[in-house]
Length: 300
Image (cartoon, rainbow, N blue to C red; front, top):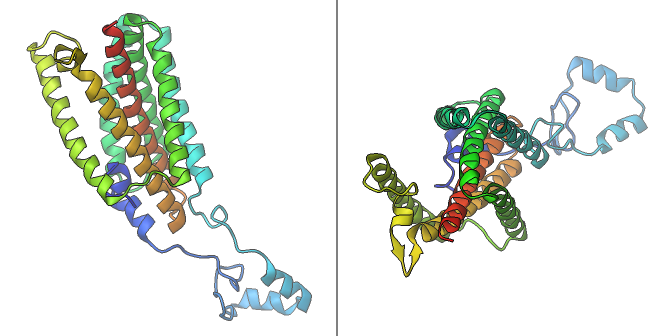
């Protein structure tokens, strides 16, 4: 599993579940989950009595049945992750839709509420011992308020930028997933080291930029991103491309962690953790794309 990436997947609970050996439904298990491959089933009273009344053919048919799959044994599957992620994204869209039917001042207030509430629930869900579907969906809904308000503001300044950001986010996600499935892009140790160095640099820039905007040291709404130019190109363009690349690679690490969870037979409930982690990364990716597009549109 890729360590050092999304903290949600690196939490001790999800990581412990993916590192634990899977519990197989071995050949020779009886209906009580007892016995194993090459072992004689435990002769518990009810089970053994029932077997005495079976014919030889019936017993053979019972032992010839295929082993139970992950879904039957309560293990996480890719389908589980897909369904939970779709539910989270649905909550994000529902929250974003709310901002379309309220006044602009109220939409701005909801954006702030969504940003603060989403941040708090992100921390709660990250460090919670067991995933809570209600809290994860609540997080997604609050992030929807934040993204909806942000999109409405920026789309008012630069018409069409919201739709472009949605298409861009889906495109990056699809390309990243295809590259991961093909095996052409993997979270190697060397790539992880570069990712961590780049993330630290990006975090420092974002913190300095935020402080300068809040203190009024820079008048531009995007701060240093547009006030500093390199060869006539705003600094924010280079930073935005880097951030989108980091978010895309974070998706690769998320996919790696999910794959490890499925292979290790992690409990089904951790599919909510996987969905939460993917949602966090996709929210980050969308914010970076719409910010980059806004900076580019502002220079036209």
